[in-house]
Image 1 (cartoon, helix red, strand yellow):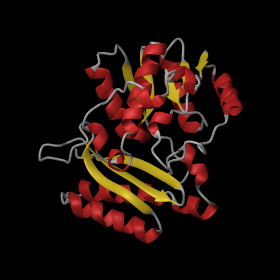
Image 2 (cartoon, rainbow, N blue to C red):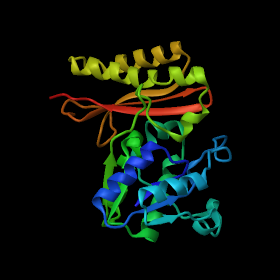
Image 3 (cartoon, helix red, strand yellow):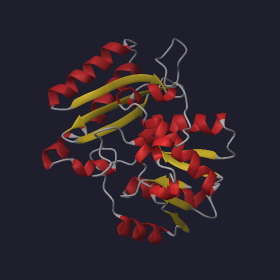
Image 4 (cartoon, rainbow, N blue to C red):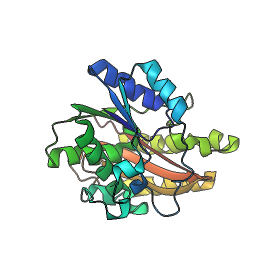
Length: 258
């Protein structure tokens, strides 16, 4: 299964290609999930390109497209929907500024897992926090599913692909790859031996602000637990989220400490 909210781009295409390589039958889901949009977020304006998405999936040889309506997924309304909540992992990073977002993600993913019954499910590493949360969901609830992370797909100038990139103006689009560059700068400093993570986070936040971003956070975290690094943490990732115009951009990069 490859779950999506539609408006497919090359990042989604890579997920489908990986699934087609690994599996006999691929189901792609397409559902713009209202539970994961907060107040004043872009639910109504989120790009919907159903016919173009169908053409892409047909070209890729996807066997089944499951595109339920909101009424199908939440027949009693989504405000009274039973929720699936993964504690702790969803309260940090993006979860701090988007309360309830990951509860919406895990609830809809649980429903999709039960409806589709996949053996494997594919998620992009651009949304690493989401991937970590879903892996914990699968483990804790004993889903017999392999959760596969697929590397972030980037443009020629290293902007992570996202449906929300189309909100960027031309000048913002030229500036957008600076988020990735600032995260790489933090990574390079840590790999050079700097363990003053708070200082590196603050420098990156200040640099993004000076460039014209409105940063939500830059954070150095344990890649598995999303906790602040401890002395024995040897699997780190640098996470960042920032607004540029009306687009909220997220990205992350691994730290190689070997």
